[in-house]
Amino acid sequence: MNHKFIVLVVFSLLIILLVAAVNAANVRTVTADTFWDVNASGTTVNGSSSIVDAQGSESSCNRVRVGLLQWDVSDIPTSETVEHVKVTLHTIRSSTGTDSNTKLALFAAPDNWDESTQQSDLPTPPSDGDTPLMEVSGPYAVNGDVVFDAQGSSDALVSYVQNQVAGDRTVSFWVKITSGCPSGGSARVAWNSRESGTSYLELYDANAVTISRFSSNNNYTWPVIAGIVALALAAVAGIGYGARRFNS
Image (cartoon, rainbow, N blue to C red):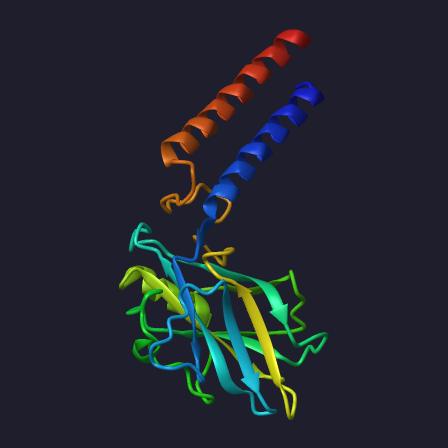
């Protein structure tokens, strides 16, 4: 068989696999966010703020502000198996500088809130001794991304998201600074809110190089994706046929 023909077919198949892998990720933007402020009055509503904020004070990192994020995952079938979770926050303010000791953590949060919920009715933030789902260490650069990336069904973050997908169909997180705050000062990390930017939740199924059975949450629909793949297969067949005729 002609060497060029083999290379052409393999390259075409790789393109198809790449299309499938990209569409295996179900990328979502946050549907509600706010922050809990220990200094705020009971009538404060932070949902319209342009930022979501996490702050800790003194060396013990006592909570000052704690971010609250929520995603709607109701269009994902409850039968799906989540094997890989990524949460990305785009940092727009940071007082941690180059300190790699500052840790930002995700905690499981209740889902019974939205951006209009009054400060006094927001759920209670995690206590200082609570165990986070995941922590990441700094530094947190301005205009950089803080990424929580977890894989495997035994991972706490993945397990929590899986339970939410199969449960009330909503994923909520507290975001809190847990360590690395300066003595006599505070550490702060803030990111774009839903009104001025986006925070991302990415869910992957167990076979990330196949077309995911997750329903699509972007501008494409699965019939369109299936059509693209069918067209690619037809193109491979046509190119292969043409190559064989050319070399015959």
